[in-house]
Image (cartoon, rainbow, N blue to C red; front, side):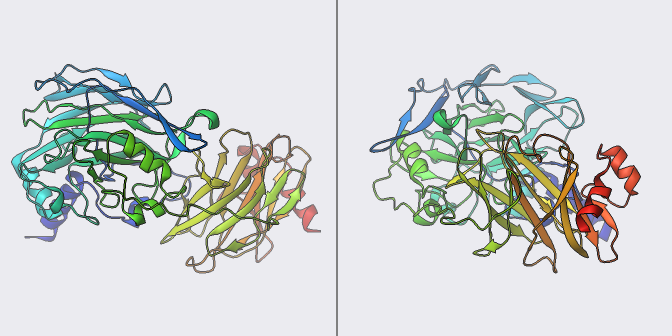
Length: 500
């Protein structure tokens, strides 16, 4: 086989095969460019014909579930396309059937895409060659496959596969299941889809959202997603759910953003296609921010056996006197990387302690934003440290108008300043060294509503070793061009004044 033929085959396999391990190269971005990615976090969904919202609320004796009972089993014939709301208007819808269209079956789930047009989730029977290719690469046997595509002109969608003889023993803890996938775009999770495992024909499907969605007093962490008969005729049950853009930020590690579990009420068994949380082992629950209590409660509500689960300690937020520095009225900035990953930003306007758990994957930073022990729904984008230039992300906190900003500092920077148009002045920002980035640093600050950093235009300016100035997002353009394009007139003069 020639090198060209090998490359073509590898590219074809990559198109077909759901990603089963973390490939840092797929999450690295150049600057602020947003990407469209088709990834398989290998999530799965099954269940009954009607969707069930599992709204979690705290009660004096623990977690309780607000839910409605699903309808009975769906008929064993193909069902017409219909889309239902499964999250009480919070931005998750699911398909309950599919109609013939475009050489396949249209689920009715549509997606706005970065090109400006709309994509529709289509289901097609995968070719035997594609099933064999994916099975060989995944190291499994398979009898069936579905090709999932968002474009009727696309003849190479993501392929999910399964075998009639599949069993839980074939997919123990640590091994992923190739019958399900997750699709992300612009750093947001947009869809989960797949087939119900053949050994759990009566399983219900739990879509778990670790960060939660909705208002603080009406937060939802889990929903049940309906299934429908595979329209290609395999007899399997299929699921497909769409998440609104901006609802769930994509995480580098699968399962930290969304996790799909199959729950068999007859046996109490729980299966995780990601290979980490089947039957809720202690490491899975310990990895949850709350120690796993909400996840266990949601599983129990769908009939799962949680009698022997061991909850973890949960996240312990920073306590005591904050290490954040007030750099301006209502603006605090991180000064140190404590415990190797934590950036303390101080208190927001609600009085909550805000901090970042800085998770590094090679030269990609995935900052996870918290208020107290709660990971927030609104999360920063990933920030790139592979380029010598800067990258940053600003995020409005849940339930308040506070803004948290995290960014990388260009190589060779000696000082970093925050310029605020509201009072036409600049203040120096502390920076922290980021391990594993060849000496690079980062900055992080919190701006409360009404502060100068929140009421007008702002800019972050870097001072190089030779005394020259550059601004975040401006690259190597001239100072005048930067101020003109970013509407920051006077920014560089204010920084020079602050430098003395």
